[in-house]
Image 1: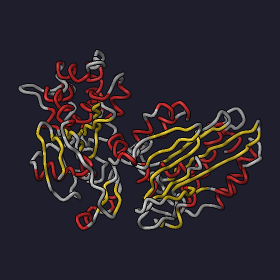
Image 2: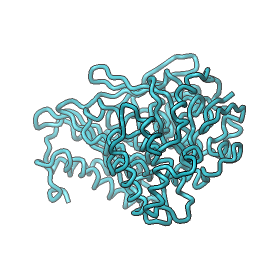
Image 3: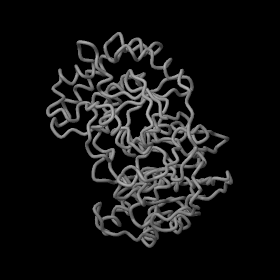
Image 4: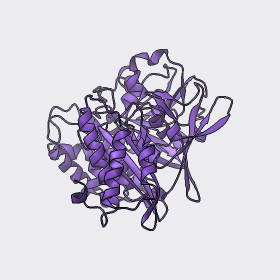
Length: 466
């Protein structure tokens, strides 16, 4: 039995666990404000808010309900646009959209309103940049976005006086959310929640499997891993960071230790999908997907990450991530093994990390080519290098020969040029919807150069390489 709060009502259902939250909301509960758009997590028309008690605090995140398995909201609060309505008036997000002419056909509007209300619930330091970031997973084909941005600016202005000590009470008092939100935490704590460990096919956030296997899901026996406590958390021991497998990209983008240890960490991770997907997509899922262009796969390859694989007998083994990919979508794991941990070393004072990605649009898109590098210096000499690249072969590529060539070399243009020649020998791109093989080789060259121009601006100039 799956139990959760849907707006202000307790739901108990024995619906097939493979059912998406979107389908349950629309067809079982007849809440039609949550729209069916792409069913791939791209358009944002199906955006809802999911409230979860974490460390004694109720947190709300936007999520694409079309990719959310029903068991992933077990014991949580699901908010649709109907659950944000106030009696006899519009809430602040709805009013801002009206005042700024932020809606035309209206199909996308519920998703935008939910994302804006999620921003109001979460923000402690409201800025226009963070408000626009909160709606980066919502697409509109009518307005040209500027009117929606003005609505986000109006909402941000109204949030400047938000009481961070009593946020829910303040938001209710100032017409951002209805008053039943004040009772949600107490209601959720009264649930007697137990999570099933049954199932054969592992699934985390659902952001890949529900796209790739949507028509086959009803016949699958799934093991739902997203909320298992033993698979969640980020820990640090000395310079080593260990990620549990169900950690999301949002967990990483908000982690203060990582933000402080890795320059531009926030900007790198903003290039990974969109806010609603980052809120539910797991790191292990990104790796186990086996995609040649998985963003986090490329990042962690360059960080020389190590996996812990655990089978159903609770037997574990460790494996370098660079040895995990055997051929296209073929992984170095047994059928009953799952990724339980990912470990990597934080950059030291002598180590620098850099990530580059090119895609058809800046955000919310799959890479044409993505690449990362970690370089450890000993004075003016490269002590160690780890380079990775995606989109140029059947698997996420760890550039072993290029990395080896860079070791014990100085940072100077002729070394970078020669390393790029080595890099080209390791690539085997093919033409596809994201570019021709010639274009991908060119991108690989330019992005490889970009690493050194960004990390060593005093030694490497663009004019030295191009």
